[in-house]
Length: 405
Image (cartoon, rainbow, N blue to C red; front, side, top):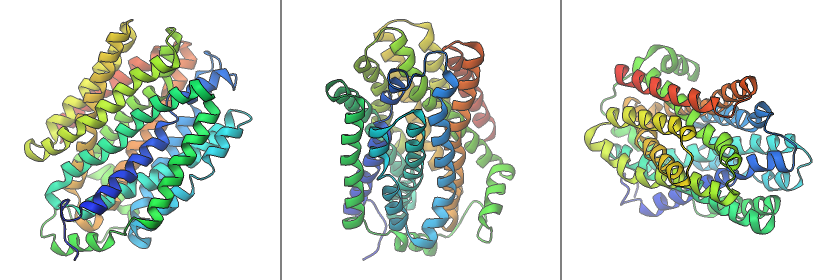
């Protein structure tokens, strides 16, 4: 019997949580290790900041584009089919990373990683929203992001550990084969398509805050990006908060290694950010269902911004760990609740598309943030310049949400 509710659909809901955990592992394996490989194996020295950012710029552009179309594709072909495409496109990633002859092989692998993340992460979230009650959106987003970003943090630490034992290429290849293969097999043999649950949401939905039923995707994009003040505020906040994740991915490993920390030590500090971000969303997601989204989003943006600004001003492992935890708590406050706030505004029949538009702008933040950081760092020849950019952008973006939401 098709009915909504996490408890009623606990088996499929749990499987979708495992799915986003595997998606998080897939991207988490590249944190810390790839920036280290950039210098050690591909000759990108400390003065080549712009080239260092290229893999994240490409990743952000691809993932953002996939997010935009994933909702529409899933409405046409089904959630499971799009999820399957996401895992199939990831299959060459281990070979590309293992056999890479130069940095552009790594960039090519991150193109495929962008496809994987945009398709698979989007479908894992949309499927859980389909299965759950309408009043459980904050809880769903919290559980989803907990599973995904706890995996991101753990994978970075795990891959760094095995990179020390086996070498970076072997560690990335072996672990990614296991993770991607598991995701593909579980999708084929375990996952159900949740489109029937999505249609039931549409049938039982009585009121919506906006009417978008007759809009094309292009019209929806223009509406959400240029016309609706609340969606604009949420979209820009999603874009800017990815500046924080981009600096963690690109510059934080290089920053810590420049301070004479080992790869394991750097990965441990960065893992604090990911694990606390993931685990705290078990609290912040459901909490927003009770107290509202706005305060959590605004204070989360500000907490992240202050944490980023504090990093280059300190010089001990304990303070860096504390600041990493501070950023993780801030991300936990804002991240699931930005998506939940968009879902609050969106009618059931257009929710996947409007969430896709939000995720387009959010993950475009990877590309824009990485590009700006690379240009500023290259121009200034200063590793610390990106920290000032990201910290101030987070503070200003939080103010925008405070005024408009």
